[in-house]
Image (cartoon, rainbow over all chains, first blue to last red; front, top):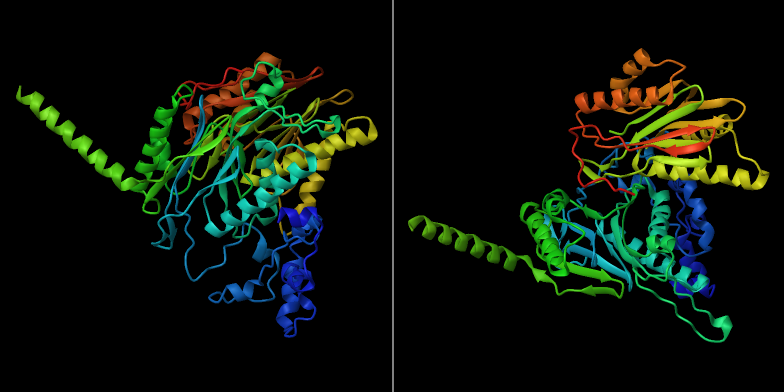
Length: 348
Length: 208
């Protein structure tokens, strides 16, 4: 995707038709009267036009006319367009309910950023996949934890990765975490009010600029960790661990602790009491694991295993996926042992 | 859920906003700054629908700065308020209106201090005091009762504290801290964050 863009490769006309809704009314033989209204509706999504900057590469998505996706709703075709598209209108009724079940969390501490998530992908009451991956690395110092609609998250994570890579190729330095969050937020904005549902936390470590000074005749990579004394204080604020929450409704927040998904209230309950800046790595990881465990215990839409990632100045490192069943058994043993010890003490 | 308040004095404007960024029932952030600096003497306070607030406020902010770059001088608060209102109105009947409520506070060398109230239907009114949010229902009567056009800075801060105490007492939501800023002829000043007694703050407020 990125290479295609940089080299200016144009899509073939055939595939171009699928990408650009404007050309729909062209040689597609079965142009029913429906299509004219559809065209108008599609082109009437005026904000999408602003995303034509990529010139041929699909950020223009083909959105089917509302009729075809709403078999159960008898909408009068001549109702005003605004009633179908603004966020205040009732959502189109679907034959199945979309659910966004997950537990993801991330927090910042002195040793970097910890990101944790469960691995259950649910779909309307059944477990579609017990081993989904919800934490996706974008580059060595940036992870994104995804929540919401699985397909949307997968797509937008790829688009974000492409745009970050393009920025790096064009400007010779990596886009900062703050910039990446803003980029994702602005890319998602045109889709506000539609069914796109992406709630991501970007977890990363901003390294001091890596400038490739080729014009000086030699490659010089200047890279510093977040706490280097040679960096000016202003830049020091920009280096170091960063955590952003970006949502498809437009929210973009920077913070030190975020949990997203249907299991997030349960995770907050565990994290709010315990997370401190001064945790060491082992404590932080076990805290994250316990928070996900408690959330999966209570939330029906979270469960199976837990993925744990740890980001430092050197990049991210991934721990093995752990089955939470083991955690459950370990906890039961602990409770039994405590119960035995207490009854022995009472006997004495 | 969110709360904005502005009080105009003889030669200053005092504004305050709460610090909570919420997502359904969860407080995601306790130190969110809802004020956007449009220029050296103009602040835009913005609340409303999740993404619309930041998008719209930043759009206005960048356009005001662009005006300054192109023309060499800054827009007056009155002009900035009307520009903002025009943008809101233009989007109002589009497919994607911005659902935001705004307070614009500024100090003009010729006109003096000004507080402009704007709502999501792009109404604009210059007012001596104004508030947005559910908290406004509780505090506007306090402002009506105690406001005088010749308030000093300290009296205005006391009036603000009265309003916040009332919210702390009667409002069902916990709003533990408020950012307070004052605009006068010298520019924008950060005042101490107001934290009503008894309200629960998650982590100790950052000292920076």
